[in-house]
Image 1 (cartoon, rainbow, N blue to C red):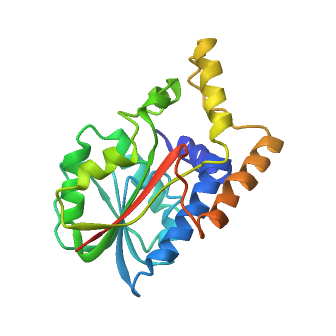
Image 2: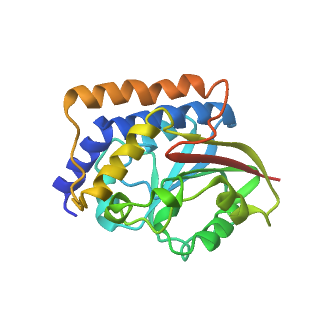
Length: 242
């Protein structure tokens, strides 16, 4: 992808209701973690860097990304304090006891070797370090949307737990999110399957719908302060290495 494509994608992620609402929820849980000052943070699969600006508020940030073009684009943005490196999962996750927090925001579902990736990632945590993951939920929701995004799978809370059950970790937070809009998304997928819509374009919604969905999705941040959701389109997991 050229710089213009990354710029377009960056604008999309900045303004689209899904990315906007997810950032609000990520911020909530980053505050819950209560990282120490100057914590060492790594984001694996940083994409256009929209989450790096948030992570910079919580520590010293590094980022791993498989695309050299993406890294070159990110180095031109206001992210001069971020240490970028090129790498793929799981083969380039060769670090141990290095980070206080490692983040994989909707990355694991793109990786064939998800179990090995988690194993190496957990080894990269310091004692009492955290791994913060978000993934799409429910394999039965698999659709053309997942194919377009090059997903390998979707997850349940049990499949995520099974991937980490043999490690010395403690689950601190696990919840679904994107719950309020779940019925609409389910209806949308059913309709597209019936009419066999295989459109590969991720179109930006009109202004009214995008603004409305931003408000609805962001409202979940308030609810998640008090209780966790038993279902939703996405899953969030934070574990602590003990």
